[in-house]
Amino acid sequence: MSTMLQPRFLRRMLTNSPPPPSRVLPVGISKYVHSPQLDKDGWSAVTTNPNDSSDNTHAPAALRLVTWNVDFMAPNAGARVSCILDHLQKVVLAGSDSSCILLQELKRDSFDEMLRSKWVREHYAVTPPSTESWGGERRYGIATLVSRNIRATNAQMAQFTHSTMGRTALFVDVEMSLPGDSGDSKDSDSESKELETRVVRIANTHLESLSEGEQERPLQLQIIADALREEGVTGGGLVGGDMNMIMPADQDIHVRAALQDACDDPSAVTWGFQPRKRYPARRLDRVFYVGDQLEVAPVEVIGKGLKVEGRGPRAQWASDHCGLMTTIRLRSES
Image (cartoon, rainbow, N blue to C red; front, top):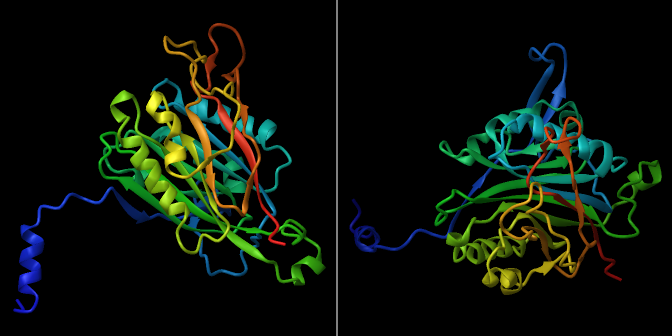
């Protein structure tokens, strides 16, 4: 061992420093391609290449964003997530060319069911590509779907090292065009024009649950907020997910992280009535954002009353949470 390195090495060994609050790992972004020669159902996942200029992606001027906790505890997780995806396809995102879907509490079987969806395979890139990024012992986790025609890069997962529930945040960067640039136009004039674009970072998270998580939630949200402000995020950032804001002290955790709430309606509750709980209905699911460049429409509650296969007392709720939907754009810099 070098004598120059030895003192520094020994100091490191003797210092009982705590672990960092999060560990950030790169994760892939997969798209599905179809060919009868590939596998038994004709589909195969391929990892996207951010340097591929021939992938037919664009920088949209507007992006529809959905966040939904799909409930890992109730039975029939696969059928329930299929019901939610069907509702998104036919109702919430019908006619939407560019969208991003943030899902929480996916189980391994509901994650697999999501990947089997023809709609997902044809229209979305998925991160992470598999449940391995959740960790070997995790029963559930999060996933983000981005329209496959959008330029999406730099997918990363932050693992909160002090979480007793294995909670994480999933980031992906998308390129969006400024107002006045026809990012959604397909005509030849717009294609020949150099678009002015910005990078918007989108985070998906499920913060620590229950009253025991009260001290961890603001720390976790602050880690996310710091990532949304990193150099290179030129268009601002937002985070959607289940924030578990159940305690009085939770109600300003976004303010402490210098984030704005995309909803000012206290009646926009997403949990507590599917079915009725012994606790009051709450706004557990939120969309927070940062950046003067980013324009975020007020969120809408989606999926109220959504049940799997039919009506009546035997029909199962698709989730104990409703989802949220918003639309994001960049503000003009002029």
